[in-house]
Image 1 (cartoon, rainbow, N blue to C red):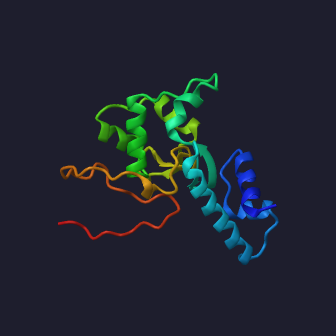
Image 2 (cartoon, rainbow, N blue to C red):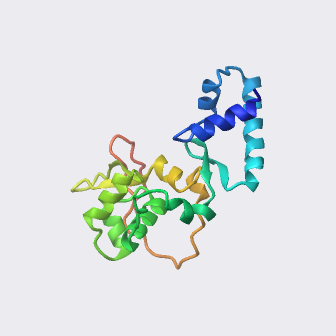
Image 3 (cartoon, rainbow, N blue to C red):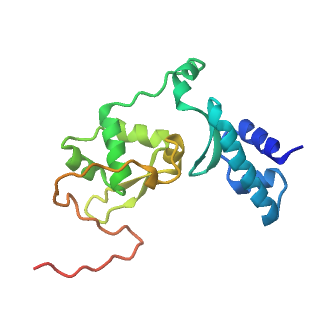
Length: 193
């Protein structure tokens, strides 16, 4: 059987993204010469899928086959569960966390100018798109939120550098100075005069 076909079958059957290491383990390949053949096969599959209604994409947790976004409306009809609808407040909160991480709830409220509802943070945590990285070492010890690998996977990104650039905005003063996390050495700044 051709290696490329075996890889295609594995990727089509997988219920998650697979790393190169995962694919090699499933194919019982354990040397670097054969790993390069696996990578070549993956690149060939990417090219072959260009004319198909699905794509082979690399996300933060590996490679996966996914339906091209042009067909999302048609495919959504297959599932009884309605797609998750995110409110403007939820999208704004997620965007702030994504671009400014790590941030506290207070930071988000300062940027948005309104309180962040508990259910917004809970929804993002429940979806697995954000997590608590640590706690700011200030009174009340607010949680510091960051995005997760699941966020990258669900939004089809390999890294945060895949995010679109923010437009140039006028300079604003720092909302909350970044403080060190617990168990991390604090950087000493010279006192400002």
